[in-house]
Amino acid sequence: MPQREGRSPEEPRVIVPLPDMIPSSSELVTEGSAKVPDASERTEEVLYYWDYLHLDDILSSQRPKSDERGNPVHDELFFITVHQTYELWFKQILAELDSLVSLMGPKHVAERDLGVVLSRLQRINSIQRLLVAQLDVLETMSPLDFLDFRSLLLPASGFQSVQFRLIENKFGLLERDRLSVEGHSYYDTLRADHAELVIESESSPSLFDYVERWLSRTPFVRSSDFDFVAEYQAVVRAKHDATRASLSGSADQLRAFEAGIRKFDAIFDRGIWEAEVLQGSRRLSYDAFMAALFINLYRDEPILQNPYRILTALIDIDASLTLWRQRHAVMAHRMLGRLTGTAGSGYDYLDETARRYTPFRDLFDVSTYLLPRPSLPTLPSSLVSGLDFMNQGAR
Ligand code: HEM
Image 1 (cartoon, rainbow, N blue to C red):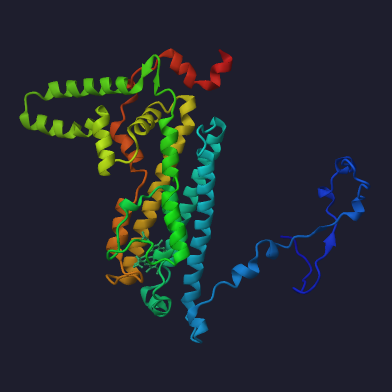
Image 2: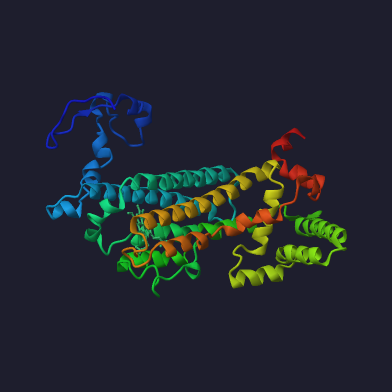
């Protein structure tokens, strides 16, 4: 920032014209306007860095309880700063999620919007990586240092982070997948207005819902001369038959092989897939999953490259959240040992959330069903030219 003269908060602000912001006189002439202001008459307030960022508010919001009690503990300011930084980044993630929902909400997601969708997802992931790394900073505080002020913050807990709950819900975590703590729902410890916000977010469509709808609408999966699901099933069945024939001598090997390919049952039979969705072991609809598989298998086709990157970014986000949960659980273990946290749960609960809270797990599972490129069903030339949109003008 450029140097400027010091000014007391009471001092009036300097008002100067901003030449580059002054429109030309022709721009200023409007119907019925009596006078075009002269450039020298137009003034703008010079914005001051401190005011623009509202640093008076932000920097006066770290108020350690230990200071209030007249017995300051050095690490409490640090603890508050770390948490507030998390909450600021949570706010930014929520803004990105809300913008994604409005981009993906309409019935048709415009091809030109896919680049923006991708860059917002990637931004969320970059922030998440920062949030994981920030736990290193927090760990410069020892468990004994934490004990110096821990009793002062009871019973407040990160468990009550409303923004974190909104992120989970807007991302697509379902209430039915959540663990209860001592028989209580996660919003029981929230203030009434916060609980209301969180409950409302549970019933609003999530990023998961929009991604599922977008995938289900993927064109090219079935066209007049190509039915991807039928072609894919035929190739996989032929592969399985060939392997089965090569094993026919050994009953043990055959049994192990049949058990191994059972995970394909749901791919071959929509009814089995839908039963698994009902029972909770799968989440994406059959059509959305098969579209995700198609995009992964044919991702080299120009029109599928952005959709493929979007699916990868969603996996990255899910993986980073899991990583944060695991890292936070390990950190909580290190700080508290086997003691419970201020909300009454501890390491085991946190560790279990890392395993279970993965809304986009079906996208990870796509890898189970990949085929090597040479085995892929050949796409008809009409479809290939549809997918190769970049070169359409050249034909
Ligand atoms: C000394 C540092 C920390 C310790 C010892 C700690 C410990 C815990 C524990 C034990 C829980 C389980 C709930 C409970 O019983 O309270 C929890 C939950 C939680 N904490 Fe922390 N935490 C720390 C720092 C942080 C930070 C910096 C954040 C960032 C916002 C955070 C966010 C959360 C969230 C979001 C939950 C809820 C997790 C869930 O229910 O899945 N914690 N924490």
